[in-house]
Image 1 (tube, rainbow, N blue to C red):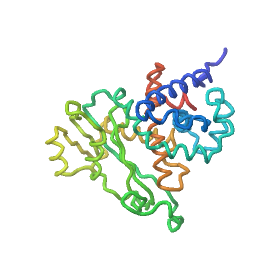
Image 2 (cartoon, helix red, strand yellow):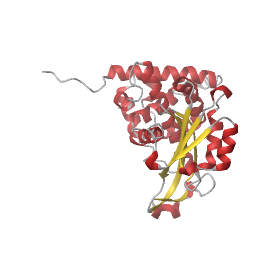
Image 3 (tube, rainbow, N blue to C red):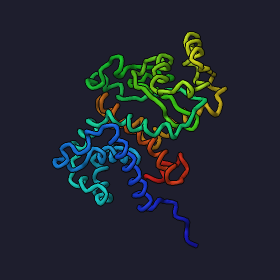
Image 4 (spheres, rainbow, N blue to C red):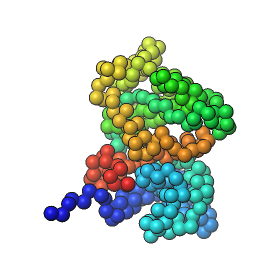
Length: 301
């Protein structure tokens, strides 16, 4: 008896990649109408194509740009002819130049994925950027309010950064911030809620977090805005509270959030923006194709 084929066919992958490009191209034309067509005769790839490839790289789970471009030229050059002969350094420069549009592009989809949330979840995760022996040579990770720093993680000390995330109960990231690893979680709640850009009639009625977010002044401030801050111990976490941890697990397991090849803070910020945007677009493309929303790796791997 023939076995069921669980590996996605190249045709379904190309369909998903085409949908991804169309979504990005349409949104980019609205966000940056002057960007399309500028110096087009001098570029092998348009800005929309570069942004699509940047997210495609993260969806494929390939951290090395050289390896990704080699595979793209081999299997997808009929969709992106300009990728043939493209040097990794050139691709890297284009992505860094366009990184300011990644979050704007992602925000165009969040409203449809989220709907009208009544409950939001706030959490954070530590990302180690250097081995302790390398810290003295950490010129690209300058210790500052937004740079890498030392922090305690259980019985270990970690030199890195902290990613703060506000997401919904269906694991859709709404807003996120990157800070030094020793930044207190409670200080980022206001900024995350402001970044969510929720309308008055769509403000979350509940905000779930662990004990790191317990603060009476913050609770009173949020209550005046109509938001109930609920904090609880680890052993009492509800299944809703755990959805933020599942979101981090996907970002780390599928997108390699904790094993990037970045050598500077700017490079890390670019890669994180690309990974979170790719995750959001992966959810949306699955919905467009009638697939389970969370099954991202099976389609793009």
